Amino acid sequence: MQTALLYLMTVLIWGSTWFAIEFQLGEVAVEVSLVYRFGLAALLLWLWCLWRKLPMQMPAPMHLSVALMALLNFALNYFLLYQAQLHLTSAMAAIAFSTMLLMNIINTRLFFGQPIAKRIYAGALVGIAGIAVLFAPDLTELSLANTSLLGLLLVLSGTLSASFGNMLSVRNSRHGLAILPMNAWGMLYGSLALAALALLNGKTFTISSEPAYLWSLLYLSVFGSVIAFGSYFALLKRMGPEKASYVIVLFPLVAVVFSSLFEGFQWQVSTVVGFCLVLTGNALVLTPFYKLKQLWLRFKPGKRLPVVT
Image 1 (cartoon, rainbow, N blue to C red):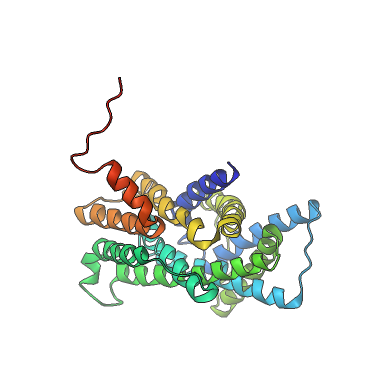
Image 2 (image 1 turned 135 degrees about the horizontal axis):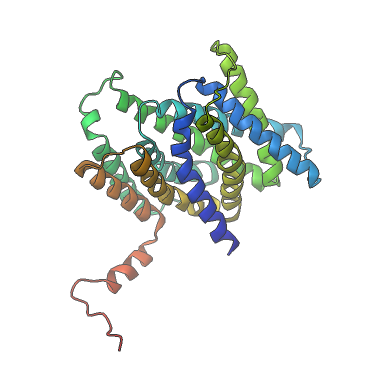
């Protein structure tokens, strides 16, 4: 029951954060908005950990590992994703980000020696085909002047960064680091890295007084950072990257619903086909062959289903 609740929270929150990010773009520099987001999240986590008297001490080598995790998972990842959403709708960005499922599985093999099942290759091809169909109109013009293609490249780069960060999170958990203290330190390190990036880029630390900006910032800090990352890292610790990655199959559905309702996301034939291919590829990657066979036998064409009287 607790695992199901963690899944539900992670899917619903992360699925909605893609739309919330749209309100962070424009008036305030991306790096600065991210400093506010993760700085506030770090403050809340530290207050909670200190109030609960959770152990915050770590050996020096673990500080280095947590700092690297934060650089990949919180700083670089989100800097690239926010930049990508300057060029893409939240729906397209979320769908492209779902490729982290495949990246996590490959990286789990590289870093932890977990074998890759044969079905994953088929699922990967289907998923990649889906991304190609989604961005087909833009891929025909292979130029960085094409903003949609640039957005896709930024999303995929941020996704790869996040996947490496996931591997470090698993490693840190296996070394006995508790989720909340690790995230408290990580978000502190991440906000410091983003602040340094903002200063290097000559950005000024302004803040918007628009209610949409302030409310979305609060939502992204509390729910999108503190609660969702805590839930997801708990799933990583309990189940490993492959099974925990089921959330990546589901949250694009939430993101697409929000984008369709509030951003005027336009559905086209290529959108439907590409989205279905991405979801199918992800499902193939995560579903063992024996389960696929059971489903096929259950719904096999021509098979008469039992009549309920």
